[in-house]
Length: 508
Image 1 (cartoon, rainbow, N blue to C red):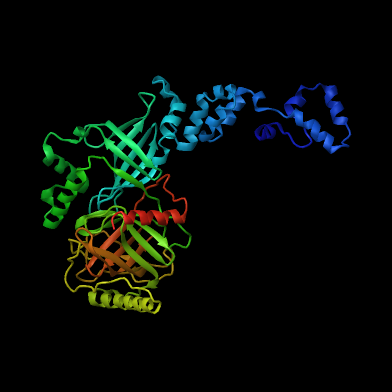
Image 2 (tube, rainbow, N blue to C red):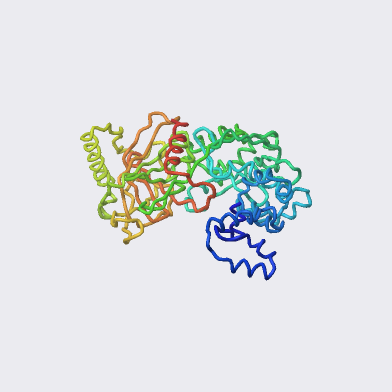
């Protein structure tokens, strides 16, 4: 075998070192003194001297087998009974668990329950390997972000939640929805973690490679003694960090109650579809990835920023009844830099509107000359923020004048939001680096009459950007999700683009 040849140093003109070690001094000297006259003859003589893996000591075979991928070991066990016996060595499977799935726990404690490392690898890690990574649940317009990871001797599905509105700079929150383990018996146990009564019986079905579903078999564990009112109050504290009495805006109260009624009916019986993180390129304006953004009465939502040539796109991972998850919330034309006026003139909304509409008209003319069908756009309204994403506060924010050709160079420029433009978050940067023309998607309730409206993309730094919605006279602030996700990279740019099309088609 090739492995044995490498271990034993067998080449075209050499014998097996193990065989050479068996020779006496005289035999060795005689062999060394033989004339190298016939290469063909020497090659023929070296053939029978090759060493077999079967001749290697067990401890060396254990080391060799432990270095192979775990998926190859079942085939190796079929070679002979000796290999099959050696492959029962837990050291081999302990190493495969560590190197392939990052399990760094002391797996010897499994001996108490009679579960071997081989069982952990075969019946837990390998069996459920296809559900590791990032997923979007099918919860109508709301979507979500699920991260399935190996956590010690468990596989856990963590639902990632934005921080409480409007604190977009705070870290993400997360809660477990299910877990799988192999601690008590030799078949994997799936447990639902939804509710407040602890783990209970659940089920997972892997529909296909990029889709799986969960089911709770004991939904009574989700109920609370105080009935739906107590469940709603508890959900509201977790989701918004406040009580209904703290929310004075009537429209926001309606949206919150609607979301609770809609999402609670699923009882953690959900279908998930795989999502990938966007591929990055050294020429990207900033590193693509996941961001938290402010969306007025809808609160904070998760958006994926990706780059596609001369355009950047923000795709909703979580959504709302107006613009559902999966839809493209903003699109930025990276060839359309916007030179903003000085701070004093920028306070005038009409001045900013004039600049943006001039760029939009240029885009329309070029599309017409190229024979393209320009996307319908609405004229900015002179009224206050009355669209679906209108913010509720009227605190002025900030932006910046376009100044430098890259996001990582140049000094920031002072900027203020025009008078009358509202922002949910008061803690926004007071300078920014670049501004570009873009469009934002707005729609009525139920995603009715969707249309793209002009706006301004404002880049603050590597981790924050904003979008000024002219039609809504509203400003959204986005902050990067500072989390590391494993098993989330797209296998190719084409696979990522296909994923975007798939999640968009589900809510179109």
